[in-house]
Image (cartoon, rainbow, N blue to C red):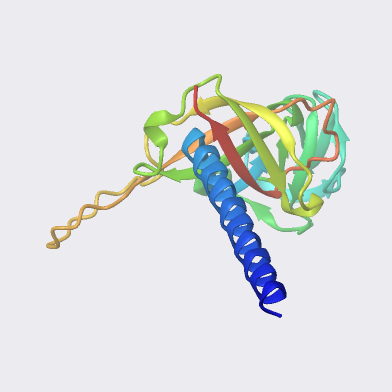
Length: 211
């Protein structure tokens, strides 16, 4: 009667040993992958904004475009007074001023009647703390990223730019001995033709592979 108990104990021991081995391999693999990549959590697909404004101040008489419209170079987007405001390049409209009849004052810097982007300049942009692997990232490094709108689908890209200056523009004086941690923008370029579903403003996460 003692033999079945011994067999059960061996089986339990082997099972526990196997599970521990699996955990060890999984933990080692996770450590290896983590050591070879830099993870950037807060990221977004975006392109530089292009503000469209009249040369002279005046009343906003008409707007000829809507958000999401694709425009050609020199296409009219709005009329301020007798002046026609045109697109500077081909691109996509991302915001418009629909307050027809308002006075647009370019002297105060509030003369923007529409904002557009050049879709060819779309990048995945992430802000990375300077002490969390920034020194390991270089232009040309391969990268993968996920986009919240598409769940766990993995997209591929390459590091296009690492900002030469931090996102913090104001100097903060502090009596504390703790030094502030600055963030730097890391931009990842991707194949626009391969991933046409990726749009300006989508949230993302980036993994950069160290070289």
